[in-house]
Image (tube, rainbow, N blue to C red; front, side, top):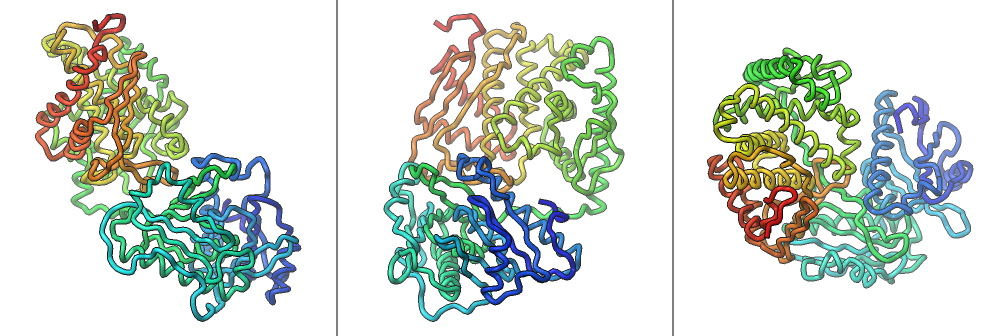
Length: 609
């Protein structure tokens, strides 16, 4: 939803939001309810529909991994409302929510409106609406919830917390039995249950003053968990309550001072509870303004990047390189130019339709740090060429670029495949460059050893784009990308020793690789549902396994904990160890794998026996 779609003006005094995920909500019914509750319902009261009812678009029909779009829809609406109010120069409007939506979505919407004058209405079975929560209403005296299982002092240990809210019905046993398959009881730090003092019932919530008390207690429980369970990784929340109370409870969530809150939704077939959303503080690294020294360094590096780009383009324009250009699939790269100044604001890296590259000052400083770590200047030049070709090849893949990756990022396996092809083409061009420019060196060490050297540089370039240092964790799909190329580079190393004169023929065929059983969490760097993997096993007791599929052969390294731990440690220590020492550690690890499965290093059509 765009800000211009919010039907408010400078005279507007309140906004009705009809949330129609499950069914339609008549505008007249909403306005009449406001009047009956003592509010102005017509004059200067705007009304908007959030997610117009469409049974084919109902979120309840979707698998859990597709629920995030419904939460993003809420966020877009709230941001559009805020932007529209700023454009009009008006104070935040009171919001009246009429919701027919899953409880998790109602809580998520309330969490986006924590400081706004909020009214939430509840629909009875006969279709009538009543006020369920008014943020201005004082809470009732005493407790609304009885709280069970809440630690009253600091407690050690690491793991999740399960928080269950039973207002309308008992659900505790059902929740715990359904999450046991992926959240074993032995891993849970605490199970906390909130229920009305008189027990769950359809009539347990009677007035807004009770809802206000429930909100205050819920906030206190979340704050207490944060204070007493420092080792809690997240709080898994399941609930059965009126929708108006769910939205009210959402307004008590403070992602910056509380544990990440993972919302559990009962599946449509009632067979399981799924994770559908996590409310957590976004790990945002403030983008600082570059100093004059930063810009001077970035400009020097940019001049080097421009030189490498110019040399590569000139070489590709030669008739002998026409097959490579055809493989790239677009001549826009040959016409492209790099801006003469570092970019100081967020901007697309490669706008292929205009043939323009704009390198950000911080990326340039990262490239400068890479140059200092590499052994030779030519290695650094090759890293740049690999990166430039990778981005150029994305054009052929349907215009995938640095400024529209978020759309494809929702389907990480697809992006992983696209990146693999772009990486492979970069390596192919780099090998052709070395043959043309350094043919004698290639002939002396052999094509396989040359290819190995190129892939190591490709891995170095990939490391530049990790968002934090030290690299303690990786996005799941990026970890797979590292594993794919580590497999290839170590395989090339073995082949180069065994057959130094062997030519390169189909040595970079696609490989699929997976590490199973690693500790993971929702990726805070992305807005879509993606897991992030910790680069350590720690006290994880689950079995771990490497599974790899290559040339129609499936291999498994079952529960070799030491192998996995060594590999993760190597990825973590990438910048800390001497480069050749690190590479040797990786080679030795994969040689153990090849010793166990020797056919992984055989040429196509040969028999390892």
